[in-house]
Length: 127
Image (cartoon, rainbow, N blue to C red; front, side):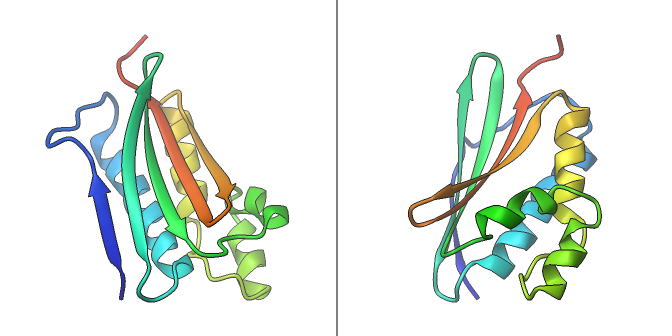
């Protein structure tokens, strides 16, 4: 349905629960598929700064309205959004947010002029 452009190093190591992090990344991608218009390209990139690694998932298009974004990070917020015809998956981003927090990180939703960035930030090593 769409293309994904991945700009990541060949090997990407981090600390923490590998299965939980993989599930969180999958949930972010699944939500992105639902929010990205057909034929558009989702971009995944990474940046590192001050001992943290941030995976940036850019989804082109109108994304989630600003007033609803915080609800996506709550366990049942997606249910409310779907009732209002915002196409998101069940608890995917809430789960990803909890995984990030459990790894001393954060999940952020940042609107841009041409889409939505979902940023998953985790430390590169244990403190």
